[in-house]
Image (cartoon, rainbow, N blue to C red; front, side, top):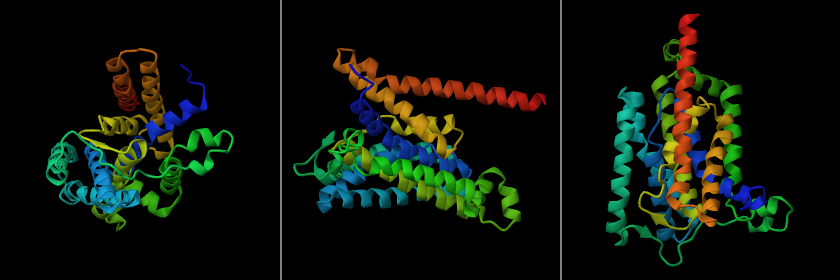
Length: 301
């Protein structure tokens, strides 16, 4: 087993990319003041819509477009409920996650007459960047990836800088941190939050499409397998700061890629599959400890 090779780097990027998009969705929602734990369900719907769109249109790009649009539409429930009506986003998100699991399984049977796995002959996956195959170092890492993989890092950096350096980004942060002050300045707090959650839904659609049309070319019931919850943990780990998300997500991606490598040398699959989720639990515990210490320091000062 070798981890210090370019093939392992490629595997880490492949595993981390859906989590990167989903965690960015969670981070911007949190910056706007809405703690979004619907990432798992939205990513699952994006994966289903991506495969369904690719099958129905004969184009993977059509699948990606359908995933983005329909996942953004599905997030309107959370956006309006939490931002406009001040409902508890946690309760709405839990419902959205449960609906996504049931609805994708139901539509799989109704629309395509199958259950479990849908991988029809000729299903188009997102194209790989094979034109990079002969480029030293970059080729072995990116030639087998879709364009969504490097684009994830570009988008995260752009959003991070937008939040830090532009008036609109600063207003969004103000809406999340001091909504009353933002209201006195004439900023539409509920509108900012609502549209941010809808954009976050579109990002989860990209995450799901990358998972079902980029990482593989198939849809399997509940195929997100906890990646949305890992994205939530990544958001908590970096305190919703987008520029730090790659560090956290690549760590989770490395754990998943390492698990596949360990299976290759005979390690039990159940043990290696549990590695990313065990890391998630550790992260949540460490985050809670850090939060408690910071709160105690503030109270004692």
